[in-house]
Length: 276
Figure 1 (cartoon, rainbow, N blue to C red):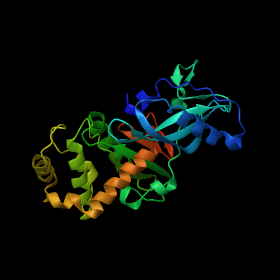
Figure 2: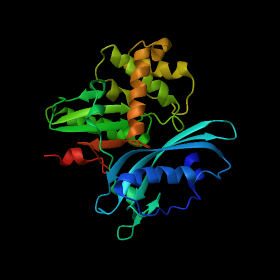
Figure 3: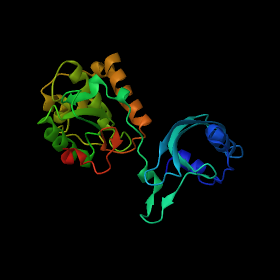
């Protein structure tokens, strides 16, 4: 459980009815006031980033809420996004569908905006292809290793049908070596090398490895390249890496692989095979 979720664990979540125009401000104020007596929080700023529909539950709306807190103990800033649900009268962080036994968050899909389909993230296909597929992945994630290369190779065969966009999302806590790997991959792509993403999944390195020299050596060995440590710190590499993480944050990506098919979250990760 994340730190922010722990801080929210005891909040009562009942709101009185307000007009649609005032509801978002009411939600923000309510959540902020809920932290007034929390001994761990020095200050809290709450902002609603978007309002989303809940499939099959038209009465409810899902709000993407950003919590920006300053902790009392060490002055550390903690920023987290999460979903909150409201029907205009009730506000709650957790909601379940009785018939399906699923959390209501399973019925929410945050739209993947057109502005997120960046040229530098297009690794296969025509940008005007019939379908756009966005993949967030960590090259050292076990499931990603089997899924991502297969999916990309499948879609590469029909470039006018699929435009494949790839976003680096290394799970640093689980796979610290992935951070160095993806930065090296970005550096190599900036030099004009093709198919870097696919080859990235062939690099054999311990996910827990923290030696930059060892990680980069294995990368260069697999890629038959000569990327230097200083190249990973360039403005261009840093900008691309930061952009990928920012888009992941806006889409509330919290695991890998995460796939968006034509702007909607594909929880099956297999819609590309069903596309006509």
